Length: 367
Image (tube, rainbow, N blue to C red):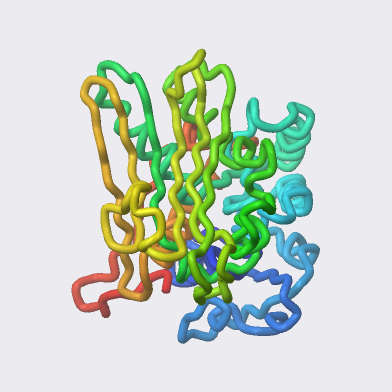
């Protein structure tokens, strides 16, 4: 059965996710919603970067999409700087009986013990009323720190510690809001950006810590934060603009799930804007960037994850992976019982109907 899908947001993740919906025969695109006035009226194929005309043109009205009564909404609107608005949008969608899968609001990836119970109850009630489910996911937070370590854990006899790692050069990352406003790149190191305000790291990645803790039955007592920032030794340019001398050019941070005084579940990020900065910090497993999962136990594992793409670098490949995880989860989310769904209770998601056949052009798909 073809699933009718509407799509919200055509930014870094939303654009390839929209391409995934259009090109996958399991889905029929019914509508697209955008926030940029310049995109209103454009065909979905153009917004997705595809050489196709779908006949579906973009609107800036969420009400119009709700009125279409689709089976599912792919929600990729910005959530980092507008969490309340993203939360409200998704509440409206599920209350209207529309299943939601997307990249925001991140707090709903696994909200228990991360946000107040009253907000969780509002979502669960809206889902019950509409008979819909919602699944929020991505790469990190996302499958690197839930799906992959959980699968590996199924082969272990004992688990002592879990560490999920991202090491990346963000010089080519084309997202000025995230880079400047959220992470604070280019700003004086004495200025504390949004991401490093007390409690923000724990909220943003607490969903990943708490989900792993629940899945592995690890009694995490609390979540701690740590970060270290490095200024630019001289001015230089990156994809989103200029980094002045003395502005933040590299950062390392950890979110630690503590059992007593021991960090048992750790999310570890090293982000540079130039490869030569802080050579003493962890280095990626491939040029540009990689992810990793480390389990100390019996047996122990170290798994390096090196995303690549024929259409872009490591940053583009990681964004593509987030889009793929979202789009491929649509059938499972539509079939799920109403409520907030997570990696812990959804069935495994496979890349079904993505093989193009031996005579198809290589390198096609989401891009």
